[in-house]
Amino acid sequence: MLFRSISGHPVNETENFQDPSSLYTLTKKTIDYYASFTDLEFYSLRMATVNGYSPNLRTNQIINKLFLESKKKNALTIYDPEKIFTVLGIADLCRAIETIVLQTDKRGIYNLGSFNTSINEIIKALLELHQFSVQIPTKHDSRYHMQIGTEKFQHAYAFTFSETIRTILSDLQLNISSSTHFLKSR
Image (cartoon, rainbow, N blue to C red; front, side, top):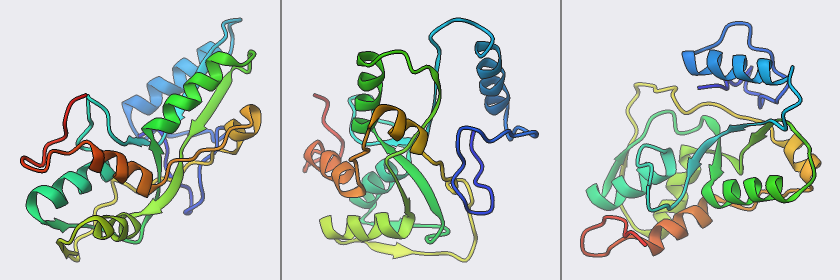
């Protein structure tokens, strides 16, 4: 996990983590640091968790996982339903990369995230699609509690993130088999 929310505020691209939270964070920071000394047209995209349908679906990402589990088990157990975190829709990720490729050199480090949400908001949207039971144990799980600020990318590229919980769920719903509850490949 590269980002850690600081006092509940979104993390921006200028945050200097003196104490990296993982080997991934240390590696990413080191690569970004070395790239800053080159003349390469280098882009470092710091992405929120990518959710949404793809033929190579990540079933461990929060919206994808909750969608599939609620369909398969007709029940969900959720932790820390009020914590806010950032999600990046796969369609927004693809549009962002296309935007970078098609525009002039604006190299740098950019955060990418479609929206901030909570598990409660995802559950509400899922319940609009189908009914299932929800259990909320008192045990807490803090794995999904990070927020990132995307203003730098939006400003540099005149970009608007358009994905929402409902657009991601709609795409997943379009690609699920009603007989098996598995996602179809295209």
